[in-house]
Structures are given as structure tokens and as C-alpha cells.
Length: 637
Ligand code: CUV
Image 1 (cartoon, rainbow, N blue to C red):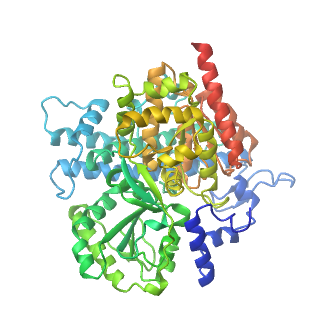
Image 2: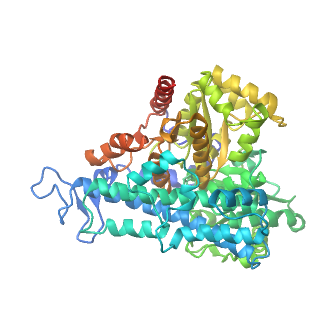
Image 3: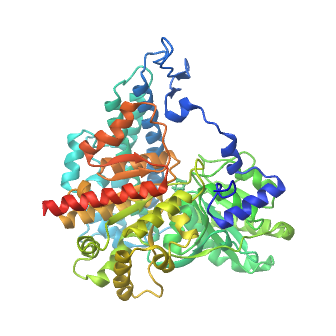
């Protein structure tokens, strides 16, 4: 690989990085390089900054240096650091879920005019699932009970297992969670307790700390599962859509607005308002308004509204470097503070909208659900104003994009399977596994991590798994990589799928009745929609009469980066899924803790982590895991 190839496999991004270099911009790619070489203590997790006597580092050869000042050993330090990431991730996902739940409650109470229950069928399904009475009751009353049940997950004072876990998991899995005492009863309490547990001079037992971490990771799952359900109720459950991905989706003749962040409460309104405001854009000399998505809020509006993907996490700055981005409206999470300084060199307006996410010097417009459409319109007018100042000489949009077929919520995926097997849709996957056509199912999740070339791990693992007949679903920035690289369309199947996988696709395409062929990888949505993938594996377990940990299913985060990704990986392990991570996390500084999460976890939960930075080897190991599970299932039968 040349130095240039080491940056990214995304051709559009590479063009913009060249442009950045020409005009002397330092991007996140330069900053990542500047961080090398990393501090070994931090990199392996044996740097403790929990109290301010520290930082303490583990210096095994120095007398007195093999422990922290308080006496914490490497295993305590590594375990504490690891679970504190989980607390951060669970806070982010569940707070996002809480915001949606609060909004849904206010809708039912008639307090918000701009939102409504868009999918009453989903409301009924969720109500039934969590045990809310539906017979003879009004939509508002049912909505209130569902929203209150969600809000109750965050602060209830009585001991009751979290509802979205108990209602989504099968009995054998619930038994594992109970037997290991990691079943949470209150999201906020678990997060607070985990911070307490890891305070200086508190828990020193790495196993106990890891179990506390897993309990909190399950809160992350609960928060995202309810976020997915309630977002579907509010905005609709996605159906297959055709759109496009990559920087080429930015249009020179239009007012371009990127929605970036995570929460659909804002981005849905921007999309809706934009559709009503094309005339204002035309009056300013543009041919209309073009909304594109970055990161997970982009995935939300892609799934429900068919909005194009501009790019994913690591390349968010490059959208501004096109010179044609008029506004970037952001809400929460995964938004680089550097966007502001870059925007200063262009006409681009960065608009922050949430009280907990501001960037010094950027425009802050407090988003208010009570005036949601008005707030969205104000943002769009800012963009139209900015467009008037766009400097045509600075515009260079890479002519690179791919067709995307997305919108595969579990419901829409099952609807396609239903065309092949009307009585028992999930059988379609299981029959293909039992016939040896496919080896199983893989979930791709997670971010970008510039410890390796951007998008390279995602792409390579997927190509390898396709060749080996693995059925693939994806969320987050992984899914956006596949969109940009042409894996979210039918050509991807022709190019990369093995013979068995092709046979399954031929059967599905024949009956699917779509205007286009099905994609190689099924885009399931944003990071919180990893809950959809978990519902898929649970459905498979039920139909196969197995526990989750026996289903030929494996998860991978080839370029994991955020605390949220660590939380997601951790609940996947607790729920029985093997999880590949394509970067070595700061956990290897303690052999004991590393062994707990990579080996002992398998004995206890059936799920486990493994780290492999080489994507070809990683895919090989994933295929081995699927084959082993299939082999065991054949023996059991
Ligand atoms: Ni929530 S968490 S970088 S946007 S997937 Fe993308 Fe997805 Fe990671 Fe963030």
C-alpha cells in the first residue's frame, strides 16, 4: 500500500484529501498521524486517571511500580477503564432514547403539533410486546402508556427487570442474564452505580467490575431498542428505498444541507421543512434544496425518507471541503469540533442545536420540539442565505457516488422473505443455512478508526464474507461505507457473492417484486438500530429452537471507535454473539481482563470478543465461528 492508499479506500475522500493538502488544511487524517507514536500505557489500558494522585502507569519492572499509588493492579485499572467506556456509550444511546420517549409522550398529551404517531401498526405491535392493553383504547392512551413504560426504564424506584430486554429476549437468554446477576432494572441507576463501582478505593475485582460493565451494556441495549421502536412509531418504519451515497450526492446547483449526528427528532423535521421550501431556494438562484446525511442521523433519514448519504464519520470534514456545503446542522454525538474551523474557510454554516452539544464560534439555534418545523425552517433559511455567499471558484465535488438500496428494518426484510415463504418468513434464512447455501448471518456495526486506512477494514471483511456465502446486515458508519463502495446494491451481489449466496439472492429477487435488485448488504439503519439485528438473531433462535449463542450469527465492528461501539459490542457478547473488533482496544495491558472478555466470556455467555486487525484473517475467523456453530447444530439434530 502506498502512503496515499493508506489514508482511505474511498476515491471521493482521497480526492478531497488531496485538495486539503493543496490548500494546506489539516484534517483528522493529519491529526491522526500527528498522534503517532501512541503512549503504550494509554494504548494498552494500563494508565489510570481515576483520581488526581495519578496518572498512574503500570511499570512492572520498577519496585513499587507494578501497582497504582492506591495499590490497584493492572487488572483493576484495565477493567475500570473498560467499563467506564461502556458507561459513556450507554449514557449516549439511552439519553437519545429518553429524548424520543419524552417527545412521544408529549405527542400523546397533545403538547406538540409538529409530530404525530405515523405508524399506528407499530404502536400496536410494541404495545402488545411490552404488555400494554390495546383493546378498545384510543391511540393517544396507548401511546401514553408505551411512552411512560419507556420513561419508566430510566428511573423506576422498584425492582423490575428492564422491559425492552425482557420483551425482546427469549427465556434461555433471560436465564443467563439472571444467573450472572447482570439483568438491569433501571438504566440511570446502572450507569451511576458503575461510576460508583469504579471510583478510587472501590471495587478492585476485575470479574465483578466487568459484570457491572455488562449490566450497564444491557442498559445501552435497552435504550437503543426503545429508541428504535419509538422512532418507528413517530416517523414510520422504513421500507426499501433507492438513493445514492458518497460526496457525489452533494449537488453544485442546489442549496446543500447536511444533517449530521444521531437524533431523528431534528433531522426528520429538516427533511420535511426542506420539501416545502424549494421555492425559497429557487428565489436565491439555486435549483432547489438537497439534504444529505452524515453519520447515524443520516442513516435514520435514509431509512425512512430515502435521503442520500454524503459520507461517514472519518470523512465528515471533507463534505465541507467540496465548497458546496451550505449548512451542516448537527445534533448530538460523533460531530468533530474541527468542523467549525474548516467552515470558517468557506461559506458553510455549522448549526448546533442541542443544549449539550455546542462548538465555540459556531451558530447555535436551540432546537425546540414545540416549534420543531419553525426551527427547521429557520435552519434552512440560514443555509439559503449562506448559499448566496458560496464561492464558485472553491467548489469541487468529486464525481463519485454509488446507488443505494436501503430501508431494511426487520419488518421490511421479513416482508421480502414473506414473498418466498408466506407462512414462515424467517425460515427463508434458516432453510438457506440448512441447505448449506449460506453459512449464517453477520452484522456489521460501528465507526471509522484512523488507526487503519479509512473504510478498508469494513470493505475487506465484507468482500471476504460475501465470497464465503455469509448473509450480511449493517448499521452505522459501516453501512455508510458499504453505501459509498457499491455494496448496497445488486451489482455488489454479482461482484462479490459466492455461489450459495447468489442462489439465495436469485430466489429472493425473483419474488421480491421490487423495481431494483436486492443489495449485497442489508442496511438496517443507525447505531441504535443494532436492536433490529438483535431481533433478527432472536427470531432465528426461536425458529431453530436454540439459544442465541447457538445461532450461526456473528457481529463485527471492523473500525470501532466510540464508547458507544464498546457498549454495543459488550451487550452483543452478553446476548451470546461472537464479536470481532478490527482495532486492538486498550484492554490488552492486562492478560487477565483480556482473557475474561475473549475466552471466559464464551463459557459464561456463549458470546465473546476477538481482536484482529487483518481484515482477511478476521473474516476467516468469522467464517470458522459460523461453521463451528453449524456443525454443533447438525450434531444436536
Ligand atoms: Ni452512531 S458511533 S462514528 S455515527 S458508527 Fe459512526 Fe454511528 Fe460510530 Fe458514530
